[in-house]
Image 1 (tube, chains in turn green, purple):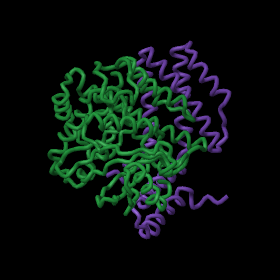
Image 2 (tube, rainbow over the protein chains, first blue to last red; image 1 turned 90 degrees about the vertical axis):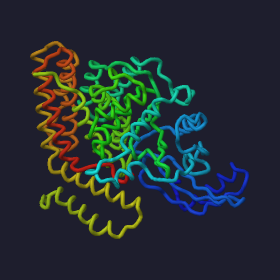
Image 3 (cartoon, rainbow over the protein chains, first blue to last red; image 1 turned 135 degrees about the vertical axis):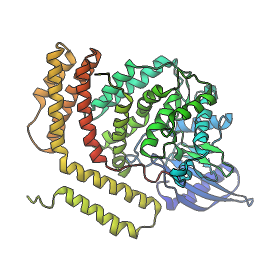
Image 4 (spheres, each protein chain N blue to C red; image 1 turned 90 degrees about the horizontal axis):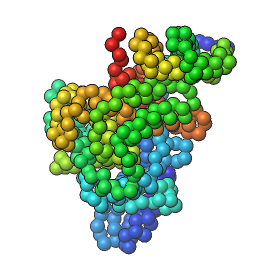
Length: 338
Length: 154
């Protein structure tokens, strides 16, 4: 994937070896919109006359990734979810786990007709509202959180209990600060606040961890398919609500902040979770807590650049996401009354 | 040395050149997105170049003053004492950017330790004072960030 000119030949050989018939790549185009991984779309013509479109998702060259995640883990998770049919998603088809065939570790996925929910939202007139999209988004989030954690098997780690899991998550703020090249008082402040203000627990579930409309494909019938599972883990489902609130505040439209009460009521209805656990206060709490997963990745990229180990426009461009994170930390950590 | 045009002006001029000359000649969607990102980073760098030393000094002074106030009001915390000791022995008056940044980081460690101690002791006035210092830093970060959203995410 690192050299698009070579990819038609490489991909053709890769698919031929797996399908038992010759595959010819008739077009290969890098895709835009992915921040963490290289993406491309390829049209295939099989020897038996069938045609097929696939999507490739591979690692950037060493030192050029804005975040480091493990393709082996993502592939195992995608396989588990595909086999369990837990949620509509682009099927995981093949994997080059060594990079020897496609030039980098690369997952080959089924192509989904349609467009992203973000693209659809961008065409809406804010004055007219977003129609069915709001509740569709809530329902898709709830559907992710209704997945039986057993469906993912041993693909990703399974925390033992909610309390120790939350403690581990909070500690990631301190770890991120300790590992960084300079002090960051926001992280130690928010860690202390989160520790002192833990909400009521919920059952641990599959958390997408980058839940936002650019990662939801909408097919021609209007159904949603989740993509980009690289940060998924077993955790507190409210992480996705908080993350979405944070993300959409800076890259709108925000389908939650226009009417958070209605959003959360629909979510409770779809998941069966209680109002004690899902309310405006826990939305604020998890808006701070959930951001750490992506925040720590971006901060790690910044630290690597400062140490001369990373480079690239994605790393420098996403530094601003850290400031967005700081704003949300401060908004989520309610100060004491004077 | 030549100081005019300032670094800020030069970077903003580069940004204009990128948008008016380069962007129009490019058709590749991935490259056009990279140009949008570069435009943003150049704006960030221009704002930093204009203010970062002054802002680091301003915030650093406020953070260390806070840590000293906590040390006087709630004495005996080893983390605060240790951070202040490291600051006193490691600080630099040099205005070279690396030196200012290193001193700012030492000040940040003092502030973090003092803030954690004040919050743990439920000292509301110090807690609120610390938040005003975090707000000052955030105000500076937001000025550097300017208008920003994830470009190309659709």
